[in-house]
Length: 358
Ligand code: SAH
Ligand code: SF4
Image (tube, rainbow, N blue to C red; front, side, top):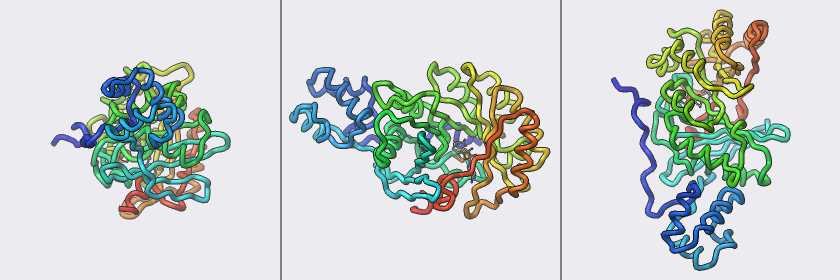
């Protein structure tokens, strides 16, 4: 049987008029040329979209009224729309975005001191079918476009009134498997890191994958790319097969080989995310095997206590066990941190806000 992730995911059907939100400079040049305008108008539109984060043609005051009217008539300027926002006691806010075809995806705004981290979705649903994950239970609907990925950033920064240029980190840890949508994710990465656009630092963008080895190999070939995080989540093939079906295509040995071959910059490390499921992945033996997996390449480990959601059948680990595993890893020279999922009081695991609305 062909696995769902070995087929490309469906794409958004083309709308009646092209959507400029998400176009790069080249695409904007072609658009203004088709309207009989000079190329520097494209740069002005680009700046308005990605530096000013404008959302309506009326804001593009440097363009003539005639051009604005032509753009209004011939194109759409459509960013993802905020459908619901839920603030958590810890300061983070979960946002549900409504997309033009009625799909919903999630993003999270997390202010930490003087830095803000945004968690982004890459697909509507997910094809990977991990059994502990709320999004995995939804199945895959489609890929997000580059504009919808970039638009989550634009919409969240606008909603939280971020001044242009303020430091922002991005993590692709919302809904979807980003390497199953690598083309659109990397097109969004280019828009997000363009110094003449949103101007975010490539080093502050992290892509998290469930271990799609073909995608990891493709990512390695990009001259500019985000940092890599791998959702390891189990330390034996028997258990990883059980909770992450992708492991049947690329097992732990194949994964480790791909990570050892991944070209890292000086000082760069691969993050290993490890979800702790009580009685399944949280034994001390797991801790020892995790340490030896992590020792094969420059890495750091992020332990994530399972975030319970209805119908999953898994439980979070005991607090004492989290501490024991941290100690065991640190004693073996592994850099380890524990991620307390933010926004637990409002929505629990990723994908739950959207499931709640649906
Ligand atoms: N699809 C990508 C990125 C999105 S999932 C990936 O799997 O890496 C982001 C992270 O959340 C992953 O590390 C995943 O293992 C973790 N995760 C999923 N469901 C979870 C849950 N219920 N509790 C805790 N972490 C979860
Ligand atoms: Fe998809 Fe990641 Fe959830 Fe697995 S953990 S189903 S890859 S979103």
